[in-house]
Image (cartoon, rainbow, N blue to C red; front, side):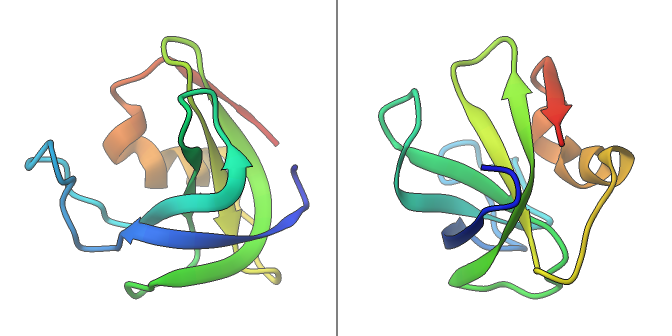
Length: 107
């Protein structure tokens, strides 16, 4: 999936809060890829980097996969076609949520 172009449906836009965990703020856009099943039975979740405003949908390339060791879910990291981010940059931007998990990044 790394390098693949995907369309993300954003259900937690930048600047919003988690619907159940009201103290979890989303500083980046976060959503899912319809048609790609994840191990939790839902659609595949994705973080969107490199977009500085809230969006409803986004098409971009998968640049990394965050493998959670203590959860059944993996998270895809998606960004614009003409951008890229290193592991440190990715970790800094997704830490608001990933700090609660033991994970590794595949690039």
